[in-house]
Length: 540
Image (cartoon, rainbow, N blue to C red):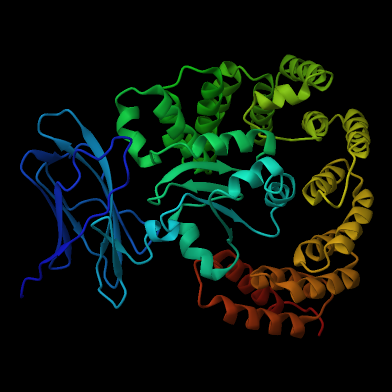
């Protein structure tokens, strides 16, 4: 076979130094369906450090097929157009070892690259996405309550708006299929996720979940002064830099990469970081838990370690509750003293005059205006755990009363959604209906509140009314048509409209065919319902 050899330009992230000492030390080439990296004299690859390749922004990571101090080789995945490589290069004097992020164009096409500062910048690269400017990207979706809060309670505040005017600000609706690749590229696993990129497209900081303006504004302001990307902090952290390790810990936590978060937080000495390390270990054990006895035991051990070592009384309490619920699920005996101790602790928390402070010291995140409601919900869970129906009902009444006291406004729709959820937990769903109607009136051009009302009506077995709301929701699809159609199919099934349900299923499955990965769960649910309908005696 004729050997194809193409020397490609390199892309390196910016460094805290004026220039990377190892910059220009590597030559990349494509040879016989392999990417071959070689290093110049005076430098070597760190063959003990992590190295990986990602092709066409897909999730899978590929390790080098050859990994020595002088040569790295990656097998090219067929029919891919670009590769993103990550590896470390050191100088032979062993004074520096730096991370490199590199994109390699595998298939040339018109307009595929441009020159920037003497380096090749592939089309579609993160650097091109940032466009040479500091860029803040917000990944969200119309249905997400925390996203709604972030938009209506944080991003519109003067202190935040003043900072956004200095940089690029891009909002990404993850429901839209055209945004699937960019969401995957940045490893977005939950929303809202907010990511700050430096001028070269390197990730500087990431936030997960709702962030109050009072904390988000100063954090963003500080991050805008940072020149190093997250990838560039790895070498510093591995060398024992506590600040770098802490930054990496919070970044990994926001990425929901629990093992990495726990590793980096272990470098930190702060009480807050210890709490997040424990939370990371618990989240990892929870994600790994299956039906095996060993995995359940590992989760219980993580919980026990968490409530034993955490300095947050709120985290201690919720992890103890999770632990006891696990014991009951496995039909294991729960000691009376443990129940009484937890009841006492919850009562103390409920009556604490600084509930906001307790939440700030925990890993629960902001629960503005619903701190007491959250504690009462945990208390009701405990009484249900012990089958104490009388006290459970009494606590639910207290929970409803606590939500009643919150000053709600359609200008803060996220808080209204929180109130609706807590009313459900309190066993008084009837209090939710007026709130849903207010939201629909205030925001008639989005599917979000029609769909929420349809779900509410379905639970109340008011299926004809639910169908009307589902139809209204589908008038404002906003990229969510398959899921909205699935909800309508379920209502049609309840109404016995078999033929109409099957027709809608078939039409929806056609929509999802082009994006099977994105709509995998929806496709499975629709297919299962169709099989059920075809095998049932549901009337036409």
